[in-house]
Image 1 (cartoon, helix red, strand yellow):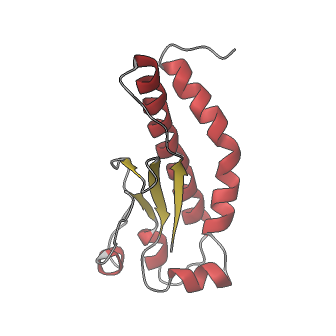
Image 2 (cartoon, helix red, strand yellow; image 1 turned 60 degrees about the vertical axis):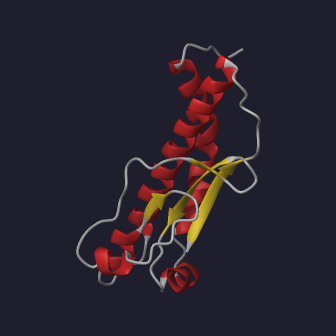
Amino acid sequence: MASTVTLKKFDWLDNPILKDVKTAAERTLTKTAERIQNNAKAVVHQITGTLNRSIHFAELDYEGGADYSIAKNSDLRINQVPIRKSPDGGLGIEVGSWVFYAIIEEDRHPYLKPSVEEALPFVEKYLTDEMKSLGYRKV
């Protein structure tokens, strides 16, 4: 069970301003994904802790086949992942758990959807902060 956060298709060209926008967008996606991941870990229903340890963000189309075995003993939290183009040409990152029972737990005890909803209001702030860090000002 993963949630995908994407920015829709945009032609970045070779324009330095557009490259800065892309950089800010990538950083914003990563910050948003970290926030969703951390919130989900804080609220997920726990019995053994494997589901909690399995929640992380990853590149688009992440398979997660070995996540269950790894999460039994260690946290799969990943702090930096490559942001790749989504199938529609936008930027994207996935957040969630790829263990086989994650979807069942999400239905019984929602942890991912509320975490996404909590993080969404911060996207504009993150993007504004990233643009400011690149030398742009809000007008």
